[in-house]
Image (tube, rainbow, N blue to C red; front, side):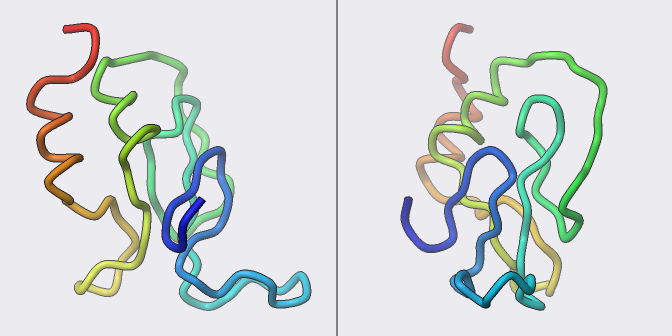
Length: 88
């Protein structure tokens, strides 16, 4: 995967390989459907599925935003996918 992208709860942000310590700017993908991007490594959610969750898994980039918080970067690919999620 490229820098800033991740699936299945891996860290993002370009500071990987820090000898086991989590980088201060790490973002994590979590939730049962891998649809949450946050500063917390182990976000737990209920398990439901929505078609738009596939967009986060396929074209989503979970990284630190200009606001300072972790979030999904609103790329054109993500925006287009969320407007017409697969399977709808």
